[in-house]
Length: 489
Image (cartoon, rainbow, N blue to C red):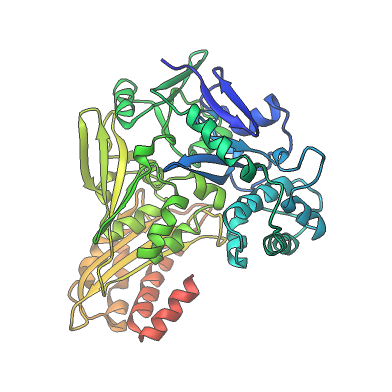
């Protein structure tokens, strides 16, 4: 039995056999390694001050992603390369071009958030030689600044991409082949279990081993991206034991596409899935772009968003409206259920003892059907939904409703279809008169709660108005429909 994890920190290979399952990368960097360039701002993956890059092998290639160290657990680091802001400058003190651009364009004032911004820009610099302004803004969604303002930082990003010399000092480019070789050398062979006192971190080596572990440990906490579980620890101070980390399992990071479906493994992050989904279901991709910041999308998984059963999770309404199915797996094999039936009640899901989410299969919208997803939140980016609505409509040749799926999040204790409203619209002409006639039927489907995100009255009225919006977006000329899509984008 292996009893230690190994990863590369900047240029050094690290082996750890004494950490707790909820110990974070941020605390390890600052307290154990004295790498204090990585800051703690919010401790909830929101401000980006703790941003570092984590490189991992995906399909044999080394991919670096910006992540929030404050909610990244040490147990998830096996077989990765962690790069902090201290790794950028050369040994003689010469700043990396990204750092120098921040100096030249006055991108730093108090300086507290600056290392996080630099690491996010560095991740973009590595992956996109000529990013658009939109790409720069997307890369910085998860970084908050209270004093400088973002324009100087954006100008620094534009400069460092347009003025990129042919030969630059860059440790991650220069040492890439060496890093790949070192990561292959520490690749996992079998399950790793690290104990600290009576606490255990378990890193299975395969999906089969994961199933056997959960058979023996049915109450273990499964952690993929930790973008939700991390807050259980940093904000609620919850003790978790044991914790099973699954982000290393390549078997759960597969994406398969055929003519009719996309099948996404439970370990696939939002960032990994984005390109595939954007090419086939653009409305769903626009929703993904509003889930957290880039760091959260680089860590969080679609499978995890489903598995935790939150009534305000963003992806379940979008997937339910598409008719997605969920494959659950245990030691005795898999079973597949309709995604909407997975959610039973608040905090209760149809997941048997020892089962875990293995994959979700998403039917592609059929040619000629209409599909839209709407997220309502207090701010556009990096905010939790007050409510989320997804509509999938097929019209008959006589412009009557042939098939309709309406799914909502934030309106009940679970993500849920509006069954009464669907029935009221079935077979009816798709007209404003019909919408006006039946939209109050939504009162029979939902009685939402009032909380700090929105009142019950606001949620109910907004949900009805989103139905009207969907009608307007799908009943105009092709030019008008395209205009709505561009506005939403």
